[in-house]
Image (cartoon, rainbow, N blue to C red; front, side, top):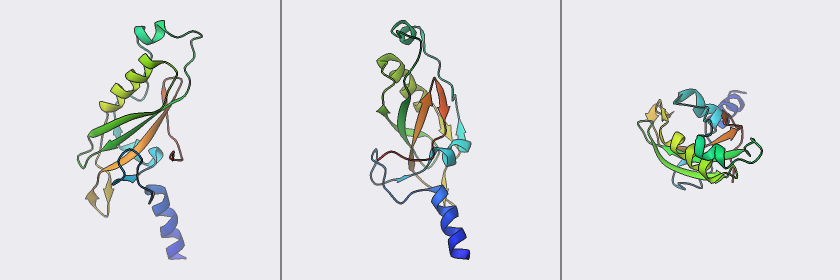
Length: 131
């Protein structure tokens, strides 16, 4: 029984699969990493992005990123486009500015990667990882 509970708890923290963005690092679900986030989770289209929008809606977008042992974002990559290049760039810039309380495994601060999904300009915590 104890091993089953421990397995469930660990499954929610990190996956054993490597990150496609940085294969040597563990991928962590955004709903686990999200509470450690400091930064803007709502990214409204700037005037350049808004000028290129045809119907006012944005397609869902996803940005993959990695953080170091201090919680600083050190790698960012667009995983799914919003179909608006200007807005995609804006999302990548916003994620680069995020900082996190360091993610710990066994008490040690650890480099990890995750993916942030944006729907209509707001961060949505996702419960799965692409790939």
